[in-house]
Amino acid sequence: MSRPGWWTRDPGGLTTETHFGRTLTCFAERPRNIGAMLGATGARHPDGDAVIDGTRRLSYAELLRRTEGMVGAMHRVGLARGDRVGIWSGNRWEAIAAVVACLRAEFVAVPLGHRLQTDEVDYMLNDSGARALIVDDALAARVPGKRRLPDLRHVFPMTDKGDHETFASAATGEPVPPLGDEETLTFLMYTSGTTGRPKGAMITHFNLAHSVLHYIRAMRLSDKVERTLLAVPFTHITGLVAQILTMFACAGAVVVQREFKANAAVRLLGDERVTHTVMVPAMYNLMLRSGGLDAAPLPHFRIGAYGGAPMPPALIQEIHRRLPGLELVNAYGSTETTSPATLLPAADAVRRRDSVGLPMHCAEVRVCDDEGRELPPGSVGELRIGGPMVVPGYWNLPGVNRDTFGDGSWRSGDIGRIDADGYVEVLDRSKDMINRAGYKVYSAEVEGLLVQHTGVVEAAVVARPCPVLGERVHAFVTVASDQPTAQELTHFVAARIADYKVPETFTLQAEPLPRNANGKIVKSSLRARALAEIPEPVR
Image (cartoon, rainbow, N blue to C red; front, side):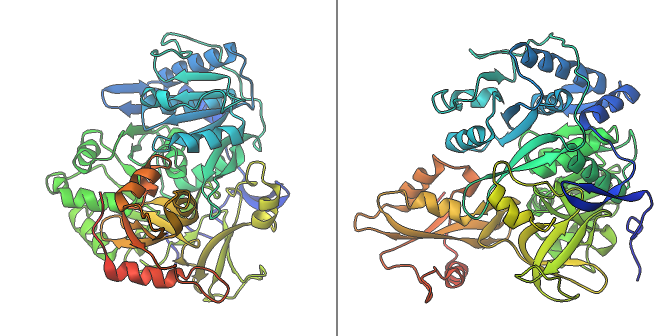
């Protein structure tokens, strides 16, 4: 069987070790501490670009100096190794510096997306027991009060403004040598589940090191050469691991786009000599539709990775026509796998467009039946993923961990198959999950919120197809006699959850939702209705 150049069953340098009670295939040579890795990068490439955010350019030396100042400020108020520190922000250089500061001081960073609402942030800070919060100035007024956050002791704005404690711009602090072993917790990254309650995936140095090496090896990234355009949120596992930490591992630069705009993204690709990015297919589609690529040769742009949603064949072909030197690489993974589990090489982008590729070097992907028995090639079942990049579990959820990670691999909930050549195909996503331009929306969370409205009897949320975003959120709602309008429900939901989770269209009805003999709502018929009706968005 022919394999792409990056993939071999044993690429060399692999070993078998036991971690988290699991026997795993590992890279023998790897960073044992990501904070120490960052320090080593700064030592060998001090004057190289680390982060570029508009007119602000930070070399590795300046980035480390600024993070040492942040560490010093947090130590002065009593924060210690292992304390959880929330980072609530959009994409900006200060947020990346905050991540580096937490890694260098071995605080546990809790990234919080800037589109989250106060109640969502409240839950995650409380669940993690965060003692400090670093917050984007634009979000500072929305920080929950201390009465709601008994563990939170300190709030730091990202600039020297406001009434909270600040990081003095000229402050310097003594860098703290990283002391933890590679199984030490580094991030709590909250991922929504089908129950609607976010779960904190526990990510360690060990997990991060293997994911970073997977990307470097599979994408053949060079030292001191690469420059990535960060347009997806840094608070997602893709932005954090596939881009920021992978660039820092190979002494590359992170070019920050605070908010994705297609024409501006094309300009940054050219002006900053970007070699690499990771986006959802909708972003590539919007760049093509903008017309900006017609006048942009982009000679440096070499790797265009994508994930989170399928790439339509017509879009692949058009990208190849406009950018013949660009390698399109499909990656499949999750927060629980610290980003990559499989990768589809550029050579297979068209020929195997239904596949998400081959397992990464140290990954094990199996198709299993409901009892956990591995099925033969070509069989359909649940994808279970093992390897050193799989997190040890969720924060403070021992029962869920037994069910989800009990056999040493992660039960993805995705239905798929693996062919005789080892290529993985995902046939269906986790039950009831909606994929809106790469943002995961779990219907149970939205449904639980809708039924809190006094005029709602019951609700079911399904995906409505969209040619640009892939899917949009549609809600079927059974209403009481004093029925609310779609606009009222939109405002009700929008005040309580992130904007991408808010239903854009509604079907309001007096009759009950369809149910099967077991009393469960039959969503297959509702999806068919949504597909047939395709109503216009309410906003």
